[in-house]
Amino acid sequence: MNTQVNKQVVETFSERQTEEFAADLARQLQPGSVVALHGDLGAGKTVFSRGFARGLGITEPISSPTYTIIQEYKLPDERWFFHLDLYRIDNYIAALAFGVEEYLDNPDAFVVLEWPLRIKELLPPHTIHIQIEHIAEESRRITIR
Image (tube, rainbow, N blue to C red; front, side):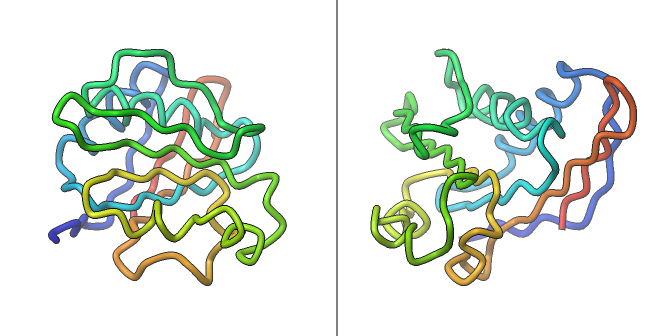
């Protein structure tokens, strides 16, 4: 699986630009990719996730799964997009209880995690880490590692 992404720093100046950047990234990745989004509340993680989903061809509304923890979206090519918000998870043991490893290890899925440090012990080595920083009202600095 080739999910190699070089370190990159980008600044966006609107939600639309953040979504477009995320959509472009999604189109570059292969199924089996795990993307961990880091950032404070309000940084733009859900906006990024929405753009990522659009890049995969998903047209239905994308919202944060803060209360449901997981949103599953079937892609047009029969693969999956899993959007996980782990804010309400205490630790990796709680995540194991709902079977998080089945999402992380699915070779036919793209996975985007919000609040990934809650399960840092379970993140696959090929995880792409993205830091989103709120630097002005509409501006974000996005760093991919």
